[in-house]
Structures are given as structure tokens and as C-alpha cells.
Image (cartoon, rainbow, N blue to C red; front, side):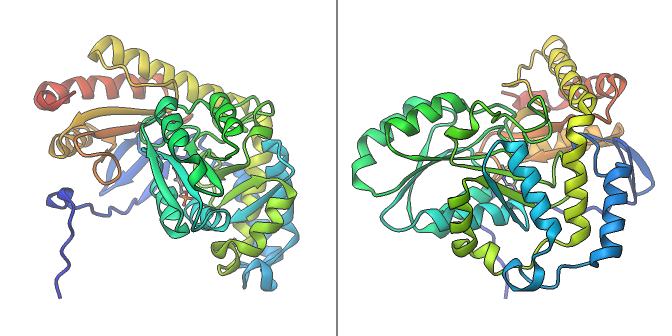
Amino acid sequence: MTISPNYSSMSLPRHLEPIEALRPGVVIIGGERLVNFASNDYLGLAHHPALIKAGIEAMDRWGAGAGASRLMSGDMEIHHELERAVAFLKGKEAALIFGSGYLANTGTIPAICGHGDAIFSDRLNHASIIDGIILSGARFFRFRHNDLESLEALLRENRNKYKNILILVESLYSMEGDEAMIRELIDTKERYGAMLMVDEAHAVGVFGDNGEGLIDSSLADGVDLIIGTFGKALGGYGAFVAVSKTLKNFLVNKARTFIFSTALPPPVVSSNIAAIKLLASEKKRREKVLKNSAHMRARLKRQLGINPAGRSQIVPVIVGEDKSAVALADHLRALGFFVKAVRPPTVPEGSSRIRLSITADHGPRDIDMLLEALADGFSYYGKGIC
Ligand SMILES: *Cc1c(COP(=O)(O)O)cnc(C)c1O
């Protein structure tokens, strides 16, 4: 049997490349030292001694794995401790942990929406959100990225044809680096009697006075479900949904990726707790990510005339054709930088890009040198740039 993929980028198949060693901000691959601009470990917490210590201690006390789902025998005190820490961080009554962000979205969305309901989703939402919507069987409407008028036009026309209405966005878009207008979305959802669900996968840890993300205590009440992950800025693995107590109890009984999947392993749970505790005390890591990002954005503008949307640590350099993006990534690689080309279906056709992830482990020199390398790459591959 042959597998015949049906999307264009298969002319440039993706492949895996095992890392041999990691240093702060650096990967070693094939004996080569490359500055890592492709990691979501934005705060550099994955190697923090407090996370490692917490993981080892929990492994000693509770074992390597949970042994069952939460509703069987996998539910330990530390899972609840993590949920309390998340609820407090996010300013919601309760939180529920899932195995990953992918599982959180594909479990939560079908639990709260189904046939007869409608979901209004930003066009650039993450694949796990799209898969959750498809699994739900609800009617799926996509609005133009960050375009409230496009959303409102769809709501006006369709609101009354469906029972429950869910508006679904990310707070910080994973491939664009720009932010949703949460306050305006809360206003919209109230006017249409809808629910609002926001995925904060890339914002938690990086934004907010205490690393809570872009939904702070003044907004939390207006957002019915907040998704966040432990695998990105928090340096661990797993994900949560922060909700009311009522909604949590409902999800415990309805979310199939929660019910039918093994609980997160104790070492991972404890490292996640340690990461949340660090958010308050290690504010300087957050400040450094944002300072590095501002530096990168200012230099991109000054040196290359590129002005990516937003202010965040995710900086897309849009190239256009997937072949040009891959060529540019290879060029940067040859100059000592680990960056990834992102192309369809991850991003829309014709918007292939280099996605630069800025972290607290980068220094200004890393960024300056990357800029030189990008300028050099553009002189070869600049034609397709839009
Ligand atoms: C990464 C990501 C996820 C998936 O989270 P994992 O824990 O890696 O499965 C979900 N939503 C968004 C917006 C993401 O960027």
C-alpha cells in the first residue's frame, strides 16, 4: 500500500532530527552547536533546578507513572494541588488537568458543544482546536483572523438558528505572535448569549504581572473556559482548563480525553507545580523574554523593514512560498541557528514563514547575530518575501 498525502508541502517532507544535548538557548545536533530559536520553553524553566528537584522527589514518593486515569486509581493529591495552583493563577474557581493541550481542546470542546450548537472560531486557531470542533459535531463557522466585524456578521446571521453558541480564540496566536481582543470578545459574547473559550497556550508564563497570561483577574470572569499548557513557558508537560466549579464537575463527567486517558505522571505534575510557584519569584525571566522580543522586533524593522504584528516572543518572518521558507531556514542553520520553517497546513497556503521563538535564555548578541544571518539570507532568498 502506498500512502498518498494530499497537501502540497509533501514535496518538502518534514523529518525528525534528534538533539544530542541541550544548553540554555542552545541545541547540539550532529556535533554542531546551534542557537535555538525554535523552542517554546520561553522562560528556560525546563532545566530549572526547582523543576528537576520537584520531579525527582515526586518520582520517589509517588512513582514514575499514575497507573490509571483519574477516575480509576490515578487521582493523587498532587493532581489536586496543581489544579488549585492553576485556578488561583488564572483567577477562576477551579481547574482540570488534561494530558496535553491537544487533549484539553479535543476533550473540552466536544463536551460542551454538539449537534444543534454552533462554534465561531478564529481562522488561525490551532489544529487541536479545529480537531475538537470537528469531533463535537457542532456547526463550524470560521471568522477572519482577529476581525470582530467578521465574527459579528456571522453571529447576527446565525445566532438564532442554534442552541448553544461558543466563540473560540487564542489569546496569543501561536504562528502570528499577535493577540486577541479579549475585552471586546467578552462584550460580543455577552450580547449574543454565547460562551467564550480562550486558549492561552503561548501566553501563560510570559504575560501578566504574575505570569497568568493575557487573561488577567479583570478579564477572567468574562471568559468561561481558559485553556493553558504546561509544556511551553512552564517547562513541563500537560495542560489545564480553568473554569467554574460547575463546569469542572461537568467536564469530569463528559470530557472523553479526560475520562479515558491515564492521569499525568507524578514527576510531571510536581514539576508543573514547581513551575507555577516560580512564576511569582522569577519575574525577571518574563521581563527578559519581552525585552529580547522588543529588541528583535526593533532590529527587524530597522534593518530589514519587517514589522511583524504584535509585541510577543513569537516573531514570524513571512516568506511566502514554502520552498523559500525552507531554503531560508537551511541558510540560517548553516550559519549556526536552529530555526524552523512553518508551512501549510500549519499556516495558510502562501504564508510559509520562519517562526522565531525568543526566550529568556537568549542574549542580545544571539539576536544581533541572527539578524545579520537573516539579512544575509534575504539577499539570497528575498524575492518571495511579502
Ligand atoms: C501547543 C498548543 C496546543 C497543544 O498543547 P500541547 O500540550 O503541546 O499538546 C494547544 N493549543 C495551542 C494554541 C497551542 O499552541
